[in-house]
Image (cartoon, rainbow, N blue to C red; front, side, top):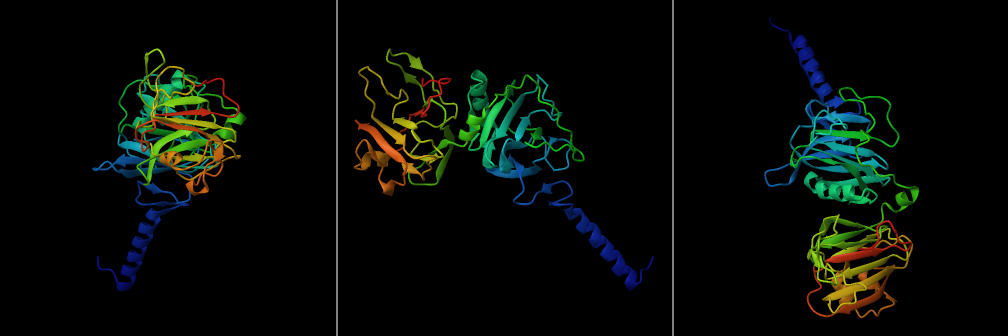
Length: 375
């Protein structure tokens, strides 16, 4: 069949319109018919695979709606059994998120390899890549002490879950989402959200806890560099964070008390975020901490700080500067340290290096949480 020039132009225009329609779909922009790319400022979960060099490679983006996304059959282009990490962007507070190893998205499946249940605590929670393999230690801490608040990242708390088999790397197969204000409609091609199974460990968080949920200490590694560690210490919980094995006054060996999996001998600085006035922060070179000990053991160094202003937030404060500055106990830290709202209560230096040698942090809130006494 021979087409006239006019008819050929019409055919070309029709083909162009078909191509454009496959790119623009409603309010979402799709990189291809299979992969959905949400607007940059949209609330979403971003799933990442691991590149050949270990760096994150985007798998898919999931909008914050009431849904369950089966990675074997979904409209967002999520690929099954390839995800190693995830991130959040602009996710509203009190959004519940489940990460599941099984593509059937069944929260009642007691034989599922693993299920992790988290909730956002900040108004717009954004979190850089969190590796799935790192959630196991946090879940162990949560299941061992269900009343404890386990913070995965600023604004993101682990509520509970289950872990049956250690088959986690690249094995994410479903994401379930329940926004704070449930969306009663169900998106095409996804399952409607159902109630969580009673077996999923989930703590009841009081309104008082919600107020303090974004109070934390961010730890930094590498001297003077951009080495933000994947470790945040909750600021409202009375707890002694020991980063390695230690011995008590009687010589008994004890394990770390380190639910945030902070690295030992690799912390150079602290950054305080929304810390309550009156909070005491005890730093020590030894995992034993040596606070109030009466034996003859001597730590290399210790420092005790007190928050003196309401909702104190500081930039990075170098630990070594606490010892190199001429500030006296009972006095505010110098302005040039960027530590407004912090007072040095006490410090002691005996020997050794202070750079990167932090092994213990003890937090004593202004009103101690007797549920978790310092260990």
